[in-house]
Image (cartoon, rainbow, N blue to C red; front, side, top):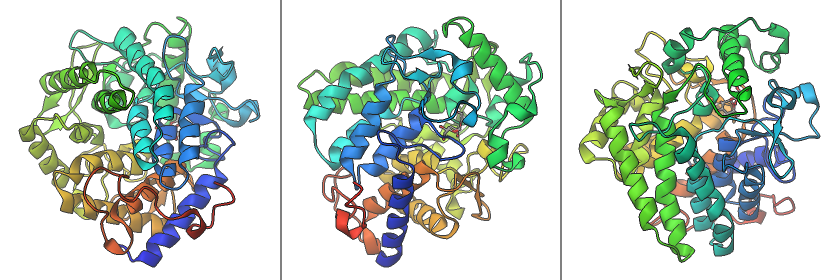
Length: 448
Ligand code: 2M8
């Protein structure tokens, strides 16, 4: 494992990133590239913050849920009114909608990983009052998805590539090829002013993103545009959330059974409709076709404790062989596939959040592989910094700098294994070590 001194230095640097990106109630993913609050980013950020500043972690989640709509949806962006209008595209003027709280938001969602985060925050610093406050909101989030996104296979659909969180994944190439999108002036994009265009989605991708979002917006955020897909990562997040909600329900004195049943039903539906040849795939709702691709999203069902052992073994073999996980970093797309691009965003680079989800699934099933993965991630950020994504072959950093979830999840990994390679004692995360280090050891007590 990493020497204690190195791990402590990386932890301090990670905390500095999170402090610098804190906006007083939430954390921006990146100051320049993503200057507002993003939904699933906040969940991953809370998981890391729980290790050193649990109050801040609770605040992060509660601020996000302050932007929840009446129908239960948690929008993928909650806009900060103090950030200049043109700082991000598409901004508030495009989405043109707000939550009952008055927060201006987008109208699409992201993978519902928030219940997982709420439970981990509670484990790091037990606070039943926080759980009682957030539980009904988490349930409403799941109910929105059941009521509005459930298809006849029992799976949930996403209506925009941005809802997958893996925006330009090659898995979306086929459905996007059928989208009839008009031209978009290159100048409206803000992302390519911050990050090299070769590391971002193409102009055609953006034209599709805008077209699909515009069509959904123009129906009052009710009916899909030309994109409707059942994605394995999104459905995994939903099922894992139900498992976490069962645990939260117990603390709140409520019945966990409905959540357990819902999680089990989702695992069955995914195994029946999305699994093929060692990997889970997305299914196109508009054509009924399974979109066979080599996306790392298809490995995330490893997170689900109810996954049948045969499927888990096959997924692990796929991760080690096809995804070349033996190198240490998990790519977002299999390196041997023709669409693989080691630097372009979600088409190959390694992302800490995706790797963290798969690591969760390996921790108990293959602890040695999981530890090696964690160690590589910690070493890579130690060398390349908290970049947005990393070349899985050379370990070079790409995308923006000082990216929040890279910092947060690395803090979580370091806390999990302890310093000097001394793993925390058995049991569930957080129950023994609670915090990564005392606040004065990370020099941030004044800011916590
Ligand atoms: C990226 O997506 C946004 C749109 O939501 C963008 O490219 O502008 C994705 O990596 C997404 O998963 C992430 O939540 C977001 C903020 O980090 O950036």
